[in-house]
Length: 330
Image (cartoon, rainbow, N blue to C red; front, top):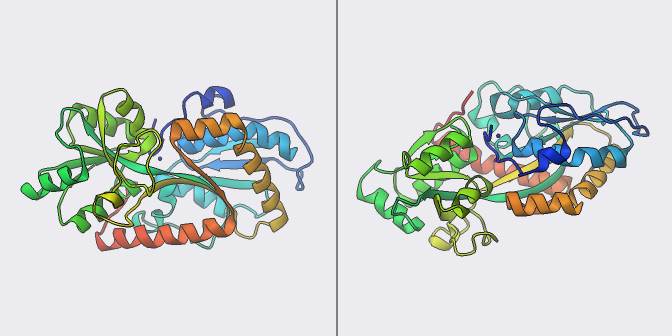
């Protein structure tokens, strides 16, 4: 990553897939259970998870021969919608697409009623996109070294905005500042839009978010990309250095998108759904939107890859949250 809360809208996709927020329904048959499929988005309409779901919905209906409804269940950083899916029967009629904060929620959100690692079966890791740190073009920072130098010059003199307390961007910047031995003031916002506006205006020194959040403003000359947290160069920003290339080997932080099902969903049904979802995501129009607009690295990795990836993400960001007593926005 949502309003552009934790995520950025994939341009034009909503128009192609249907109006945001409106259930998208078409008549069909032949899904093994013979019932309507709910594809739950645990965030408000308009964010990247919502747009991805709506892009693939018509193709899923055609390929599965079933009615597919996009069901937005926002609240508590995705916890409300996820809890509803956990409680759903594992009959192949309920699926959920989540964002990166899914891995951090057990550690930053209070009273999570389910086991993130056990109560959902992994289905597909769609892809990821590196976090990007940007600044107003009026600010002097052009590299990670500039940021560290300024932060060391005067304690708490620098600030950065994120899409919210407990977000992966917040956790990643906390970890980086600790490794660099500096203190940078965190300013949480309720979503990417307000954070973006204040970064452009110079009210915060830096902005952390998925590359797609800042890329349009960087390309439009209102923000300057300072560094990113990926492992490989960003295609749209090839001259922007990564954290790992700037003195912090193996440091990385990614936005990511994954699909899960209630634990115990029969494997043949999960395999069929994943097969048709992958085929839908490989449609040229969908792939083009994801790669060019979201700068998504298309992974389309299966259940075991997603299971291991989630475990790694939970361990990494859970430790950061616990060590620094970070709590999320409710």
